[in-house]
Length: 336
Image (cartoon, rainbow, N blue to C red; front, side):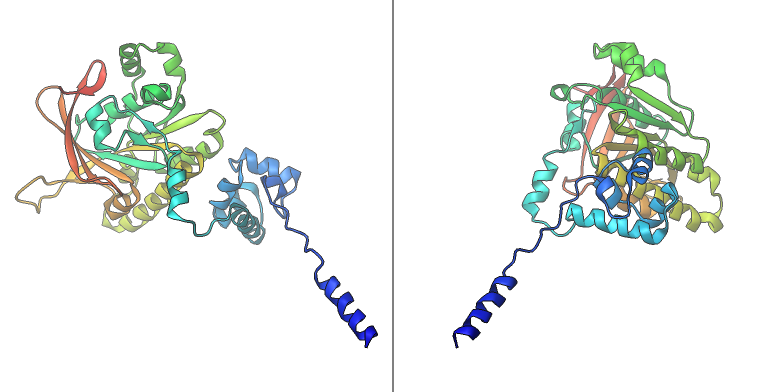
């Protein structure tokens, strides 16, 4: 009887041995299947942390670092498990949103319309006819992002993808001078690339994955987003291919915004809808794909003289509304 009792006790003690806890992965070099050389290659390709790996697709990761798709899938899955990318409370989401930065547009009224300025982790799309201040707002934001936080900036630099050959450093100097900033330092804080077609535009954004953190960038501007796509894909027969390509491009931009906590500002062309007899026939290019993917949509239009009108037509949490602002030699300012 005593012997049986002893056996039970011994069996219980074996069962109660502590299970070794799984070591928490903190760096991409610790991911299964990733050695030191692979980690270096990943970091050189823009996959600098677990979030950037977790947000990637297997085909993209495999292609960029010459890794088999099956291995890439395992690496991504491990990164997602390490990041605990499951459901979380709205309270935690709110705390994460408190880290979002905002860039002033130069106009308090326009900032108010956007909930405090152009925010990071979002895509702000501005569309309107020529002369409606789409590019002027891009120039202003490229300067504003370099301001310290207490003055409405992020203290960071900007990437400017120019698809229409409209970037003018002279305008940057004008705005910087009006803000009392060092003109040469402001110019050095903006990295400009000319995109000659849609493939080149996509390639430039792909390259930004490697450069955003290296160069301390807080804002990415594309002026204009749809111009090259519209030029490369003409006719109804190419519409599906164009929209698929644009959709992937927009998802890449949103991922850049989320992973690196940067703001994305894109301008968009418009066309007139002849079927509309009453009201404004102006419609933005890009269709539903751009409409769904843009976080904030602004419709800009001319008014009298230097005045412009901005209408917020879509936002996840802000009401529709309008405001008036000025475009002058100092940049963008309040009308009153």
